[in-house]
Length: 88
Image 1 (spheres, rainbow, N blue to C red):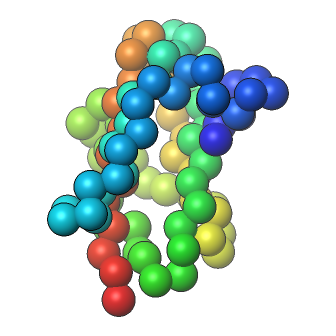
Image 2 (cartoon, one colour):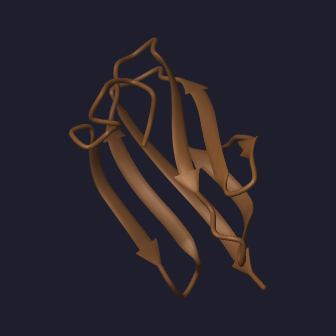
């Protein structure tokens, strides 16, 4: 989900895909340039976030416990994101 409006991204998130082999969650969303986004993710205890990318650039996640978010200011209309995990 994210902070833009009441649908929590249901309309703007165009793709969302989990790749089991690489343990990577990937997605694409339609954004409003200039808006400061927060993309929220639930991260179960058995997974640890290793790397987060927005349009190919690494960003540091924020949050606590099982809820993490990526904060960024949109510079363009199409945003891609990837979250790479390890499990234990």
